[in-house]
Length: 361
Ligand code: ADP
Image 1 (cartoon, rainbow, N blue to C red):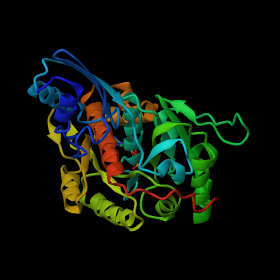
Image 2 (spheres, protein in one colour):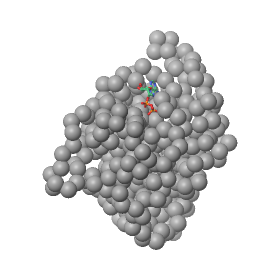
Image 3 (cartoon, rainbow, N blue to C red):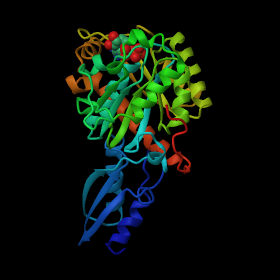
Image 4 (tube, rainbow, N blue to C red):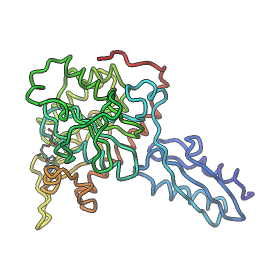
């Protein structure tokens, strides 16, 4: 077989992206192939810098190229986050490639903690990330990210988000008094949310993580009518009660055609920092079983842990404050799996007609 770029590309046509189940060439991930003697140089452009399977892809690429006779393989990496066709034009937020919703069936399961750590984790991989706190009845992103100042507007039209831990941050809590929000009626709540999407200067983002209020209600429906979210990440504790709520939430997202990216088990077993014994305070493994039953992806489990809670209270997400800890590793794995699920979802998404926002508040 001649050692030329065609041979290299033909070999790479047999390498499948393990997440996307398509070959790297037809996915457009192989770039800049150059051959010199028995050496081949190429770049693999991942669909997200947070790709959970980069090592596997690297191994498979090398094996395929060596299999057709190349002796030296110089592989470099790039990443270009994609969005589903037509999405950016359809959004209230034109520069945002993917909006990732984070929801839960009920409050207090750690939805906001997971949202912040996923967002900060994605930012650590090099992605451009924003986080929008839409938990109108209990906005906690300002505390969890440590930003409390009020946003301002440079152009007098749109608010500039604040920045923390490498991400853009905006919270409904910056703008309204949560005690007042409790008495807001549905249309006021959804109007405020649309404003936070449309009237905030988000700029170009790979991922905008949107922390939803818990439970079911007007907001998911409003979002479904106004934006094309990449999908929703559901968070639950392993307890039966919380899981029953998350199953209800899943059905509601199905009804409004928002894809469910998967389920995270938060407050999974407690690992004693002294003796490493595991105690399943809220039980363990329930979310994985529920995810299997619902036919959705299990995105990982996160232990119940003092450092996670303390990081939240201090405004430094643990993936930033203690990135090398096992707890941060668990949350970073969730972030990578979420990015993988978004990439998969984009490939599955039908080509959309370009539509404008359906309602403007
Ligand atoms: P939700 O958004 O679901 O209401 P939060 O993220 O605000 O939940 O979390 C509720 C409380 O639980 C917070 O005090 C938070 O620090 C704590 N918490 C969340 N996840 C964990 C965890 N894995 N380990 C320990 N504490 C956690």
